[in-house]
Amino acid sequence: MGSARTRLTLASIAVAFAAADTYVVVLALPDMMSGVGLSADQLQRAAPIISGFLLGYIAVLPLIGRITDVVGRTPVLVGALLLFAVGSLITAAAYDLSLVVTGRFLQGIGGGGLVPATLALVADLWPPAKRGLPLGVVGAVQELGSVLGPLLGAAVLAVADWRYIFWLNLVVAVVLAVLLRGRQRPPISSAVGLLACVALGLTLTAPERLATGITLGLPFIPFTGDSRLLTPIGVITAILLIAWLALLLHKTNLRALAQIDLVGALLLALALAGVVLAFATADPEREVLSPAGPWLLVAAAVFAIAFAAWQRHLGTPGPADVAFSPETGPASASTESTPGALPTSGEPGRDVASTADRLTPPRRVAIIPAGLLQHPAAWGSLLVSFLVGAALIAALVDIPVFARTTQGGGQLAAALVLLRFLIALPLGAVAGGWLTRRYGLGLITAAGLALAGLMFVLMAFWGRDALDTVPATLVLLGCGFGFGLALSPVNTAMLGATPQDSHGLVSALVVVARMVGMLVGVSALTAIGLRRYYALAEDIPSPNELCPGSPGTCRPFVDALREAAIAQVHTIFAGAAVCAFAAAVLAVVLLGRRRVVHG
Image (tube, rainbow, N blue to C red; front, side, top):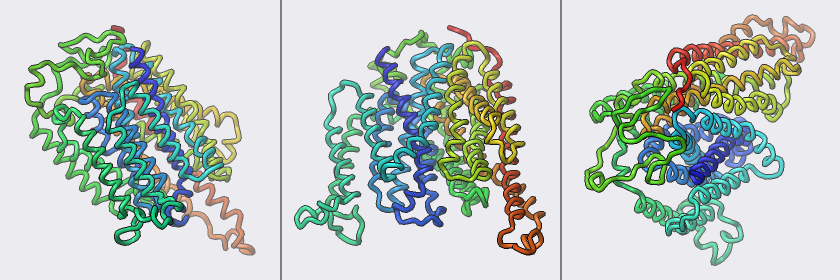
């Protein structure tokens, strides 16, 4: 039990660090652009640095969630950390945009894979009646990462190059992966993997002392062109990476992996990728969708239909015949869950297979088994998470926008204003987890989201000097605390309404729903806000009319445009309030009004 809780602690730290990395990159983006040869006016070309991470984070998450259920929590946690480390290595050593995007994509897959495995591990260690608080703690640690992210980024950038952010990621990820493995003897694949990563780092960085040497520089001479990958050391790196992958697959339980519906996972990933790229590559200040957005959404719809048809064709029933309840959890016919009890195999989520099971050919199960989300608390959790994401993104994006519009200052000053909101999120997450033992999941979620919605309403009436006052700070703290309250109850409701052997998958789906809600929300709410801005801007007299004597330095005209920009943010805050209130109502109706029943 102690070992299992140690794994959970390490996993939670990893989740926090991955969350911090997201906010670090936002601050480092201008430096990263210049590092790969992009100028400040080429921001649109740098969009894949962000969208690549989101694509890896969202599109592959359901597959990773299912793998978590099949092979176990710890192997996925270690694998996700190693993938995050490799992505960090590629990003740190990148010399062009394509390598940065590739590294960020791998970081997204690794960072995203940590979340469902950690949440599922909580469900393995605590019975339904007592898992609310630990889920709240995990949520709090994750949000704490978002608080520390801007501070960490500012500290690193103040003393070093942006690449050191990712070298730091590499070191931390490897250390956590080693600690998660425990005292097990390192396999031969670890040595091969280490050699592959060293070779990859040398290939991408091409250290001057080596690359310019008469003899030592020969491995760095390209066969053709000027790509560092098309060199002798690049070929050696590729061979080592292939050998590492082959050794890992040799150790993997391929029989267990054969149960995973890879076709369904691919179709779902392509559908999610279409949605991500349609919204994430758009310029929210000018458009809801990217130029290719309509076609990407059409492709996403086609893949979604194909996914539904394939799931229907597969026709596999749910993983087990269980009775669902968001209050008491799934009632399994085979085992009874006891507080803190672990499966007999020693690996959370896995049962010891009998001889008959090993001899029986593996049965492929649909990536989202039929009936898995049939309980209102299950699909309701996804709907609430989507709306939470749509409202939350308004705070994350537009509170800094409001700060820059009204107070001036740079990115760091705006981030410090946002910190007042972020610092209350982990506090609310812990409180929400504690309250799940005493009140209904739907009521706690609704209370938190109603509080957040009310704070958004107050923000919609902020004046120019609002951020200089104590009430504004209280509003930001209240809004963050309200969102935090809703984190644990939503996860608890989903885990309580689904069987244990799908907890990794459903945890992934909750994260996907929130992330998609954030993408759709930032585009839709910004578009609504821009309509308000343009409507007001059209009524502003020209500088020649307002200041006939000095139209070039017309202060009234600048002030009028600033007021229009403030009205734009007010409109977005109002839209976020609508999303928060709608999520609160749905939470009461769908997630249940009774408290969790102690087992």
